[in-house]
Figure 1: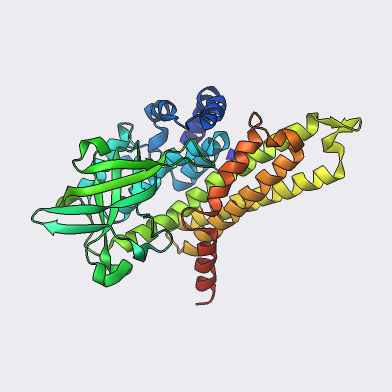
Figure 2: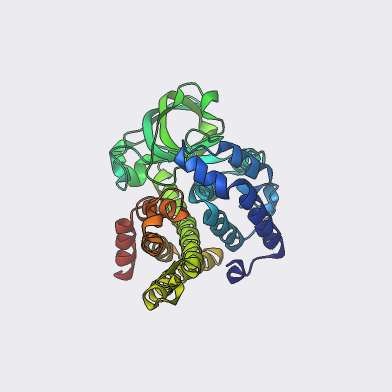
Length: 383
């Protein structure tokens, strides 16, 4: 589906590289890793050496300067092979977002240098009692001379155990609430290089098992004030602006799952013979395929539209919410239908659609649940 994105020539070259890499290093290996511990760090390291982790780095900081539409198209292809792989790579966009939006050039250079040297990031906002309700966060950052001291416990942090840099949100003025009490900080080191910072529970998940997700713990962690992103109290705004962008990438990752499930179902329907004819000749199956195709195409177009608005510096919050919501629901529907077309085989671990169905569910939950997306869309429509 790459041609639908009107990719640049450079992006088309990278697209071919991603196909070749993923056919060799991801497609089968991701299935095997999912069945075991979900550890594909060696694959991520190989991908990073090829620069797949740095697709969003601008030219002025040493990147190749791809457009957002280019990187969205490339992410869909990565996610076609494995959503966990796509999420691990694309989390750089989530983690780097607050620095890109509110950071200074020194902070951007530190972060982009890490990325260009193969690093990936982690966005540390969620807490056990503060999922969609960020105002319930209990992490604290207290000014102490030229430093801030951070204490707290973050959970469900993508790339938590393997990140090379962290963007952390903590309350500097809890009495002001989430809107003006949160502040963002850049920690430009791996977790084991920071005194007082550690990894807690590494989650054992139903799906996207190849994406490492964990708690990140802060026990009197000192962060230089120079690594505060923006001013005190701007953290929540930076987080929400970043999540608007991340919802596009979340949506296109779900589209990658949809397209893979559709492709697998079409191939199976053409080759599976029942009652003396291929399943594909059955009108019921044709209708299922048609519905799967429509859901996939609609989700992709919404992601593209939101990306176009973002690139033109136009309001895109509602459109990003629509893209994420529709794509997440589409992934759940399309993968379920793919399992149904496979019948009993679709329920078995050694067929890919079972994994795709498990991978799909989280896209109705994270980056703001689809219920939250509907609130965003509805409230904006009623203004």
